[in-house]
Amino acid sequence: MTDSDVLNYVKATARLLEIPLDEARASAVALQLGRTLVMAGQLEAFSLPMHEEMSEIFCPAEFPAADPEPEAL
Image (tube, rainbow, N blue to C red; front, side, top):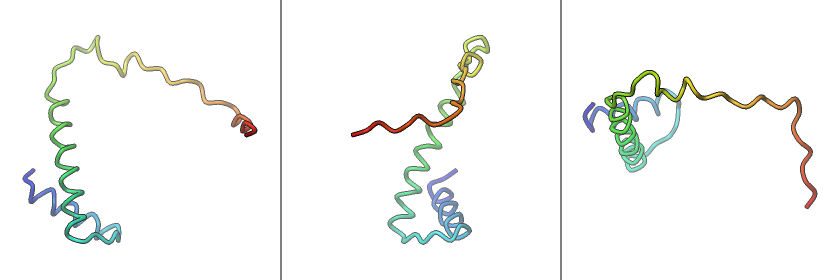
């Protein structure tokens, strides 16, 4: 995607979601999204052997049955 494509995407998405964005804010959001796209591309390009894939190792903690009582101040 080009910088122009990212900016157009941000503007179109903001319109679709009815989020008011002025030109400066849209440009700032597009800049951050563009940086995220670059980082995602770098991660996708990195070759990681299947036996080292962290998602295979990750095991989430058990969800608590109830929220703990808040501590008194």
